[in-house]
Amino acid sequence: MRKDEGKVKAALGSERSREGSGAPKQNWVPAFLAEFPEAATADPEALAQNAGDAWLAAHAPQAVFYPESAELVVRLARWASEAGVPITPRGAGRGYVGGCVPVRGGIVVNFSRMNRIREIDPRDGVAVVEPGVVTAHLQDEVAKLGWFYPPDPASAAESSLGGNVATNAGGPRCLKYGVTRHYVLGLEVVLADGTRIRVGGRTHKNKVGFDLVGLFVGSEGLLGLVTEATLRLIPRPPYRIAVAGVFPSIEAAAGAVEQIFAAGFLPSALEIADRFTLERAREFCPEPLPPGEAHLLVECDGQPAGVDAEIDSLLPILRRSGAGELLIGRGEEGCERLWRTRRSFSMALKASNLTKLNEDVVVPRRRLVDLVRLGSEIEKRYGFPVACFGHAGDGNIHVNLMIDRSRPGADGRAEEALDLLFRQIVAWGGSITGEHGIGIAKERWWPLAVSPEVRALHERLKSALDPNGLLNPGKFV
Ligand SMILES: Cc1cc2nc3c(=O)[nH]c(=O)nc-3n(C[C@H](O)[C@H](O)[C@H](O)COP(=O)(O)OP(=O)(O)OC[C@H]3O[C@@H](n4cnc5c(N)ncnc54)[C@H](O)[C@@H]3O)c2cc1C
Image (tube, rainbow, N blue to C red; front, side):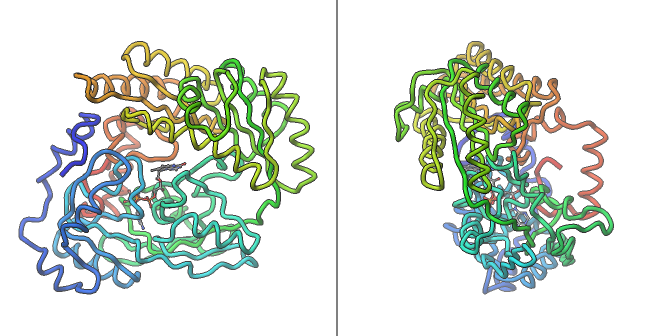
């Protein structure tokens, strides 16, 4: 089953070729349901609900498993390993690359019922959570105690912490605070054969053995099932100020980013958007956007006096770089007003009736302008609009190809455009994904992105931990 046939033909084509191979031979579903009556279902609605994520491909499993404890996950993994049935972990299904799509069927392990925050301990600066906890729920609970869990994917209101760990999720605040990996102190993981391990711990430093926490973070559900995470918390910055402005050109906005760093500032967010994004956003913005070709949002946080002083120094830099009128939002409410404008960019693109292919590429920061120019070149060459916006401070820009799929040949042209985009990104020393992962969406470009030796190392790690290839099979490793 696919909810959208052939977005990027190559990616789905490789999915097609995988179907059938490796699938369990006998009808194992009745035995499975009988073994786990409390957690297993083959209800067609549940199968359909667990078939896809926020990307375009979907494939239904034969059964879904809703564990409420790590013990159940251990029993499931042992059962599946003996029966030779694939298992695919799923958090909230808000991934952008088809990572939780069970391309070889089998069982989806849906962690939504393991959604308890077990502990928030400000003295130690840790939270212990089950994988199904929704990211924003943890953020809100720790904020009530004056503490802070910084990783902030834009999907935070829906995505799960288990999914964030498995994708090493990022967001605007990564510039100052880092990505999910920097907040994972310890993990409990169930391996494909049912072995339950604990790696890391609850201390903020830990150098015992290899960095096995790092091995599992970002492993896209291919190496183990995360059943608990111990996360680092930091004191909540009490105050923040955001400044937003429109610039006459993308070069001017990118120049401002450079100047901000050159002057020794590290804002908590530095978000850029290009002309096409602004044009679309003008209809959707809660506040009027002045004319201009590029938008920049800068946010600083910390103690009030320090933040005030930083912003006072940043305003002249922005003006000198060509910013027109600058809007300043102070405190939670003032900042949120400017962030609503920033968030409207994405909504405006989604409302365009075009299919939005969101590619979260990363370039070395000095290539920001080159990247936006490449977007314009793609626009001219292939005849569809390209909107670029995102985390300028990290060089992590969402390049959105806006495709009218009703036009003949649109999918093929999109595929060629993606080839061009990713080849150039790699040639610049960039990365084809900064946050979303490879999954199935970017599998076609996996060989472009990493050397044969590094691919072989991935294969060796995978076979060491999952020798029968039953954990989330059919993905890039
Ligand atoms: C509107 C929108 C905005 C987004 N913005 C951002 C953003 O700013 N930054 C960002 O990084 N991402 C972003 N994303 C992508 C996505 O939300 C993240 O990748 C998120 O971490 C996915 O979490 P999830 O719970 O939905 O995981 P799922 O989609 O369910 O799964 C993602 C991957 O994790 C694996 N997995 C899930 N749970 C477990 C587990 N317990 N153990 C082992 N493996 C597991 C799955 O097998 C799959 O490979 C966005 C997505 C949307 C739709």
